[in-house]
Length: 474
Image (cartoon, rainbow, N blue to C red):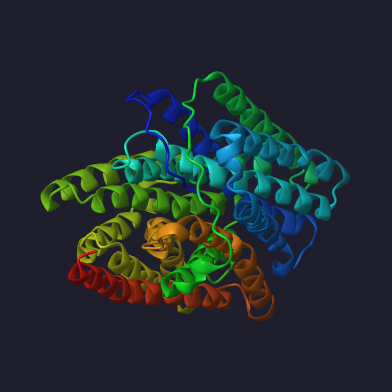
C-alpha cells in the first residue's frame, strides 16, 4: 500500500517465499468469506433482524477503515511504519492479530453473546488490515517490477480460491458437523471451527518465520504532509468507486443465502444454499484468472483466447469438484463464462473500458434478480461474482494513476474506502427488513452504476491527460 523505492537486490529465486505468502492469501480469503456463513447462522441463533445481522460486516470491514486511518495518520507524521519495522515482522503481526480474533470466538460462543462475536470480528478485521497493507506490497517486490501485476493477480486468485471453498467447508462445519444433534442452532458450533482457523494461521506464521524471506532495504521516502492527493479529481472519484465496489460485492454475498431461502426464489435451506454461495465467489476466481491473461499487454489476441479458454476450463472443473452440486445444476455458469469472454474482448484490454462493461452487466443482472423469480433470479444473482473479478484491481490502479509523490497517500485513501463493506450491507439490511430481501438489491444497483460512471470518466479523463502529456513532451 505504501510503496517506497527499494534498492534492488541481486537477482534470486523467490519461488519459496511467494508460495508461502500465497498460502497466507488463501487462508485470508477463506476466513473473510466465513462471514457470509456467520450472518444467516447468527441471525437465526439470536433472532436478529437483517439490519442487526449485517453488523457482522459492519464490524469486520469497519476495522479496515479504522486500521487504515491509523496507519495513514502515522505515515504522514512519522513515515511509513512498515518501512521501519520490515515486511516480515508486519506480516507476522497481522497474522497474530487475526489469530487472536479467531480465538475470541471461543468466549463469544461459550457465553452466546452477540456483542462478543462482533468484537472478535473487529479484531479479526484489524489483523487482515495489516496483511492488506503489508502482504500485497511484499508480493510486488518478490521479483521484477514488470511482472508485479501478474504476481498480485495470481495471489489474489488463490485468495478467491479460499472464498470459493469457505462456504462449502465452513458451512459444513457450522451448519452440520459441529451443530447440535437435534439440529437446533447453538453458538457452540462456531467454537471449534474458529479455533481450527486460529491454529492454521499460527502454523502459517510459524512457516513464514522459518522461511528465509528476502529483506528489502528501502530508501526513506519524503513525508508528504497535508491532503495534496485530494487535488486529483479521479482519485476522489476512485475512492468513492472503491467504497461502492466493496460495499456492493460484500452486500450481495451477505444476502445470497437469505435470497435463495425466499419461497419465490428457490426455498433452499442453508445447507443447500452454501453450495451456490461458492459459485458466486468461484466466479470471482475464474474472472481473476481470465483478467490476468486478458489485461496482459504482451500477449496476442489469439494467445489470449487460447490461454483464457484453458484457464476457464481448469478453474470450472476445480469449482465443480468442490461444490456438492451436479453438472446440470451448475452448467448455467458456462453461459456467464462465455459472456465474460465477450466482455473482456469488447473491453480490448483497457482497464477503464472493461470496468464500465462489467459494471453495466452487473446492473442488468441485479435488476433481473429483483424482478424475476425462481431459477432465473438465482442465476442472475450468482453471475455477479464473475463480473466483480477485476473491479478491485482496476479501480485501485485507475484511482492512483498519475499521482506522483502523492501515490502512497492516495493508495491509503483508496484502501480506507473498503469501509463500503461495512456501510452498504447495513443499508441493504434495513431495506430488507422494510421491503423484503429481493427488493433490497436496489442498493447494490446504485453501487455498480457509480462504478460504471467511474470507468467511463477514467476512459475520457485519463486518456486526455496522457494525450496532453504526450503533446507537451512529458
